[in-house]
Length: 384
Image (cartoon, rainbow, N blue to C red; front, top):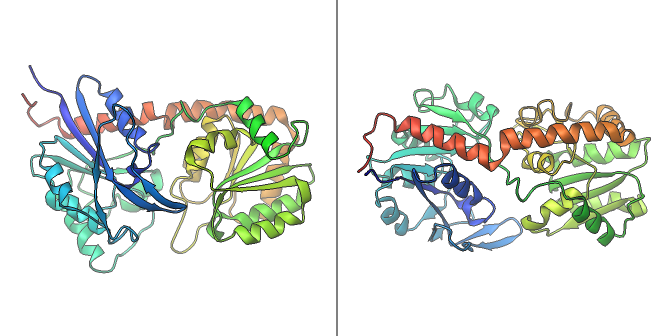
């Protein structure tokens, strides 16, 4: 009788429990056929403070020490990773960029008999300085394939040396639709906790980092110009917080700014919104890689409007509004349409829910990962 295939999926992002739900989804998709183990740092310096790995009951997860964790490009795993990689995996799925030093570690220590698959968010064509240029070349020579976390990632890398001659798939990061789901009661409780009554105007929401590239100034100016009544809820944190609070002070009771929200409480805050805006702007060194707030909002039934930056149009498709970057009049008009019509919001809500389940749910994403892994192993003998 053949044994199940064995998958190790690893990355520093797995220190966050909700991110490890991808590993669980892959395991559920391959029940009886695959044995899935996740590996993550024992701790990691997150944006809002240190994060400690906290395995859930019954979860297969290995804790690994991490060195120089303050810099993603130069961080390194300890020797425990080398021992872990030697445990006879059929596939090693590395959720680390192949150009960082940790990516080279995984490429060096993964045995030749294991299929190594890198997952990447890199959606800009870049020429890295040494040693990262050499790291990428080495890691991709060792890789059996790669996963692009979006269509703009595929566009940036599909003809790049080392990527062009390797099998790849476009698979978006998933959203847990059991956690992110419509919950009007939770949304009402959040609004009440903020001192807002339900009979007020619709709540325009923003979720994410308070930084210039996220287009917050565009959103503030669009709200200033909006003719329809509104309230606004900003959830996140970052260096623009003081500027955002100064703007909010001019709008009295209409604006709330909430920082330090644990990811487990994000769904209830999304449900407190009647629409979500993602006005990201492309810079010379950055464009939106996904817009996770969009998939999470759609899964909660919140209608969305996003800029044309990077991956956003591919994420939204026909399930929301796509607005030109930095175009304040266009943003004012789009927000006005959503504020003025509950029926329009309901239509986009239904489209977003359907798209979130079909394209971005962990169930769908888990199946796509396994389909790719099975294709890579198709010419390999079944283990016994």
